[in-house]
Amino acid sequence: KETIHPTEKPVKLIKHFIEIHSNPNDLVLDPFSGSGTTAIACLQTNRNFIGIEIEPKYVEIANKRISDYKQQLKLELGVTNEDWISKT
Image 1 (spheres, rainbow, N blue to C red):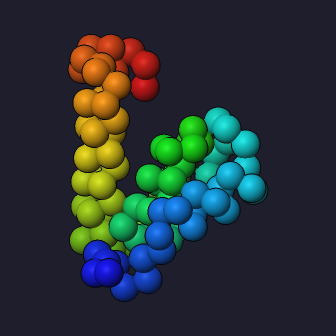
Image 2: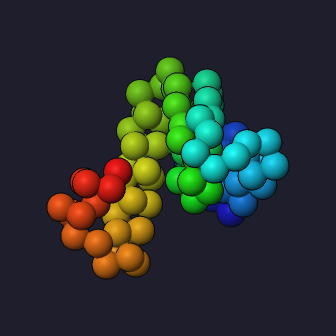
């Protein structure tokens, strides 16, 4: 499978580690966030996250992945923008 980062991990793997090492609503710190896989896993498991990345290219990629994920979630839930803003 083609990846967007040289050391990208599967979301499923990171999600597993997050679930066994934290609780819902906990804060997860990823000091090398790369393409945002940990952020996506946190969103999927109801965790808060802080991502740090030095490469602007990967910051853009991670921000887009997070935005795309949230947009897809809104579509699946049938939530309006106004409802979403008040809940996030």
